[in-house]
Image (cartoon, rainbow, N blue to C red):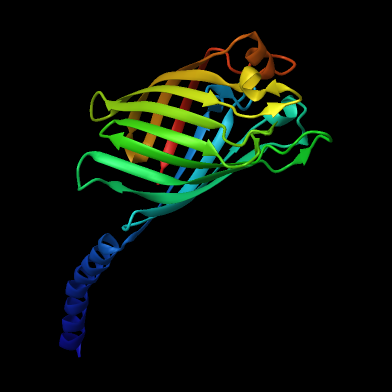
Length: 262
């Protein structure tokens, strides 16, 4: 009996690593993958404009991808810009939902990405104003550490601006690895609003350009710390539109963060 038990124990001990190897191999061969991220930021900057009135932001999301190139995800952050501007009587959340298809051209360093992104801002809209919920279609091309992305608004109330279907945003970015842990980020963006409200073009008060320059450093256990500088190019009319009662939200800003991926 003891020999039988020893033999069984030995068989189990030998089978365990084989089972673990089989499970690991099956996981590696799976066409499905799920990842997540969580970060704490000194403020939330979107297209060069502070969304939290320079106050801290907690952000995070999840992404699903398939080996075919299909993907979907969701991401959330606290915001205050809608209530700060009195556009909403209550609103403290941005909730993004997106999906698309990406891949490479003939297994080269050139890639592409196309999809849809819905920005959702739950809350109560101030009477007489419009919701800020925005649906954009996007297409991007990339080469190694360079990328160019074009986003086109499909709705008529882009980020709360009426009659704005056709508004677009161009994002040209570089994420250059200085070392295996230290990265350099540079970005240029152009936000171009379309449409006319009460005889005034949206372009005259809502369009602008933005710039970003930053560094990131990879830490153990998939943590990253970083900081970046952002600024915008606006005239006096545009600065007034992107200001609340206390400050201009597109001014020169410095943001620091820590992020965890899993």
